[in-house]
Image (cartoon, rainbow, N blue to C red; front, top):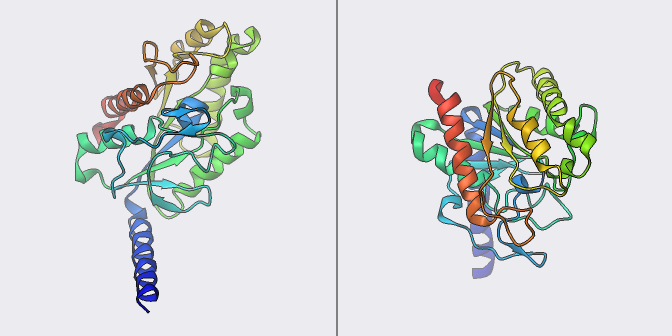
Length: 264
């Protein structure tokens, strides 16, 4: 009998938590997380396993929620992309540090912050072009995130490591990224949608500087760039360490607050 009562109580508490998350849908400030592995997060991953350590800057809080792969809002926690970047081991990324820093700076008046994980490791920017599976999923999840209310405040984009292998891909990066931004703004019916991209700290090939130049040369309105160069990498010389992911998340938050946060 006692076990039955405990199970019933747990179910009621779980239902209440899910209800509270859904009940604040109309006040969400939503951020889309897209790109490849360094956005999905590989901090703390070694030997195909995540060690489970969560830095203080990435701790969960009731006012930070995430859109699951099943399109349900739930309390956000690391690893944010575990059910999105499937087939790979996800760890700490920049998303939770970003969210906590925004809320630290803005306080309780900011309301609920919603994260929409969309990043997939090992993907070239051509795989995110309009009409592709990844692009369609990005638009679908972004659209669903505001179905019950809320506003998409920005897209956070960290991608390009896979475009450093081939010179043609690297030289075409700037144009492909600008086209992606314009298509996304059109399909989300938000012509001024803020986008904050990350300039690469590493790459899979030898054309990192070519991709970086394309990223830093983007001049589209409401597109800002945060430079990851200088952040510490893991032993693979490709993925950011846990502390680097935290630093990047804070840099993204400050970029958002300085560039787009004045009207919130």
